[in-house]
Image 1 (cartoon, rainbow, N blue to C red):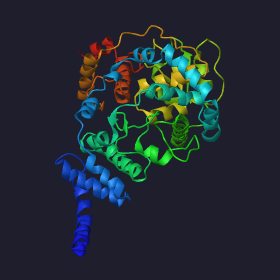
Image 2 (image 1 turned 45 degrees about the vertical axis):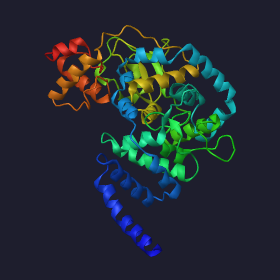
Image 3 (image 1 turned 180 degrees about the vertical axis):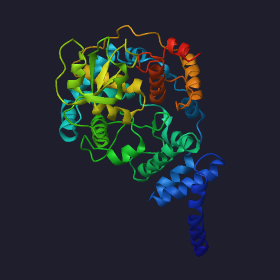
Image 4 (image 1 turned 90 degrees about the vertical axis):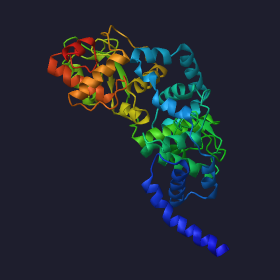
Length: 394
């Protein structure tokens, strides 16, 4: 009997990888789960991690959240003013003082300043107070089985099984709807590969230990390429006659050239006349707030791909470091989400890849807007306005 069981296991082990290859997402859940099990075993997940898969299932609430991220239809001014509250400013200052030694260690060992980590900590979980109540196993299983982004979430599900197998987390751990865990909301692969025991208790606890969470975030940002000693974001003033076609995060030129073009610090003082590369970001067009974004700001976008979120997090970090609140100025009227969808459809018809028609002003939509503004003789600042829609015949 034992021999038969062993032979059966060998047959299954040979057949299941082809299942995993054939069915990366969708279809019968039990068949899909068998494929994940085979893939996990091939990556060294042991019995405890494999057994955890029995508790996996589909959570419709996770799918609902994945399909409805309306928070990113807000403008930068709306989102930032809502998220950077007086309470968050006060608690951020208090935590920077309370964990000063931990933040100092983070900068010493990883090169990441405390205010940068504190900004993420504030926005992600209100300093650990709101870490999410979604079962992480079910959230990752749901998003891995779903065919929208399985290439992102299936590896995270297997990383989670490795965490369970190693006794680092339990199967009933909870977090964000997209599978992030802990006070800084990192994905299981980051927990597994970048987790740091900050409090010296011999284990990495990203939910209960602030020092562990802080230093893990510092380690993650460092591995993403953070440049020690360099800035991330500076608010600036821009002249009315600037060539707007030269703006945009990816169009980096030395600060000395921005100075020559009439760009100054937010208070009107001269920028440092050096060769540090920076792009001019205009989240609400050429009449709205303006920021110089450096290479370190690109690391923010590795953490979260939303420009609105990352600008808010980066500006909050600047506030914690002593900068004043940004000047909203007087931006032109933008497009509401439903009209932005109309614009995205029009841009698609013109051959632009704007991603989903979702009413969210993402990078691809901004770049398409810039190109059409150039063609129509409008200020090429990437900010969609009613005038642009009119120019496109809508």
